[in-house]
Amino acid sequence: MGIRVNKYIASSGYCSRRQADILVEEGHVKVNGVTAVNGTVVEDGQSVTVDGRDIIPEEKKIYIALHKPLGITCTTDRRDPTNIIDYLDMDDRVFPIGRLDKNSSGLILLTNDGDIVNKLLRAENGHEKEYQVRVDKKIRPGFKEEMESGVEILGQKTLPCHVEITGTHTFNIILKQGLNRQIRRMCEVLGYRVTRLRRIRFVNITLGDMKPGERRYLRKDEVSDLIRLCSGSSESSDKPH
Image (cartoon, rainbow, N blue to C red; front, side, top):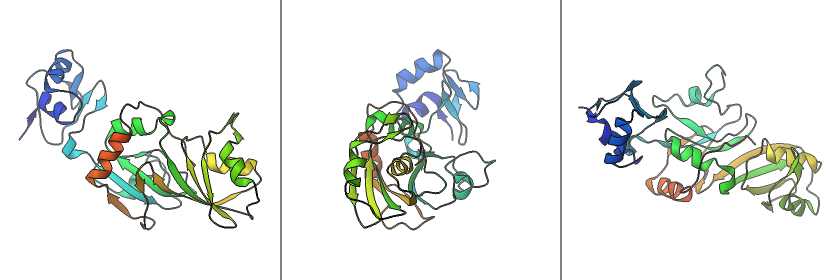
């Protein structure tokens, strides 16, 4: 059984039902690519957009945590045989929040909720991402302080970060920005080559004991915290590490 388009939009949390009526009246809403009118009914499986933006009802929103293995690329381009969408092999259309490069592993979130993606990827919001890193030689005294105070890469100095040395060749790092291959470039400037890089936390979501290739749906409280932490944020993009 179908649902009226204004109720469908309101059920997504996008706006109130009355505001949805106005959007329909002004021609901003399409159902399966056709401009909606007041009274248009959305049938199961049909797509709804407002100014080209997908509208997903709350009960149909999907949030997945995946331990991305090495060799998988965080792209939705299916011309790439290593793309993450074919790897997941899901019926629902989802896309990754940010990126991990092909030679990095660890936590990646995927969702069909475009709003939360745009808000979480806005670099200046300072959302934390934590990584475990191994380098090719023994870490020298002063490395921690050099990394934390900022390193010149890509024509700019990286923002202050937190580093914890965990072994002779290993450390954890918490970043609040997402420059292209940032950790690898920072280490290269200081004379090290990264041999293993794994993301273990994204904002409030942790990798835990998930094995490579394992996935799980986020709990309701985790999603609520994500939404709370990104409230008031806007759009941007993330770069691979």
